[in-house]
Length: 251
Image (cartoon, rainbow, N blue to C red; front, side):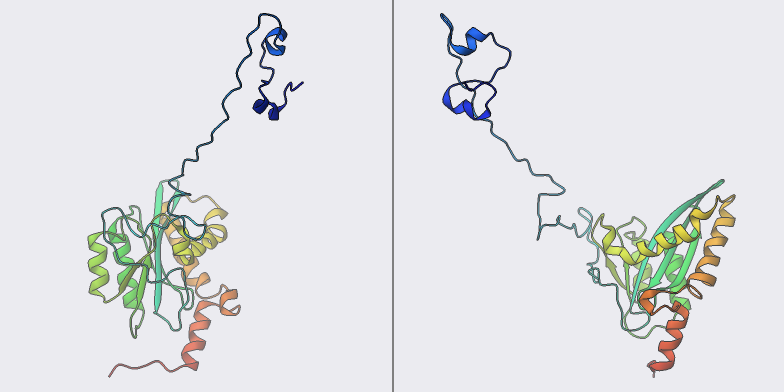
């Protein structure tokens, strides 16, 4: 008897599906029920995880649809051999009781120093352009500087592209919707979130912006030790590098 035997479908018997015993066992006058056809499983590719896989990972989309943006010059290698060789930038936001504060920061991947930070209550192109202007004015650059960002609308805007070109920076964009392509900035935001932003409720946007600026200027850059730098601060690391290696002078 092949009752409830999944292997019996190939021998003419059918599983018990609620029919009368006489119908199942082929009693007098009962017609034998044909075996059901075998199940066929169709594999439908998932547009996000199956299509365009390369070495087991989803395909990375290089730029926005029908929008030409600069290529990724970093390829997740957030290291540099000298100051101002590679900058990364991004925008974060945090709420206060009277609104939100948007902060744009630029990080030097050589020393992990934040070389510029700007604030606004609106995430517009002025926010990112002011950060670029601040970084250029605060740093003495020798040689080419890559400025790496994601595909946020502020960074893909015409105004930002013109400003980057005006200062002679090399624009670089990570792939669309991939946080790992800007991991250096994401790591900084995560630290600030834990060490400052989530420690209290903020009454006003002015108070919050002032606290972020103080955290960056007086703690993160000047005092916070980084294991990547040998457990010294970014300021100490750059001071040590400058005293050890000669900086080329312009003729």
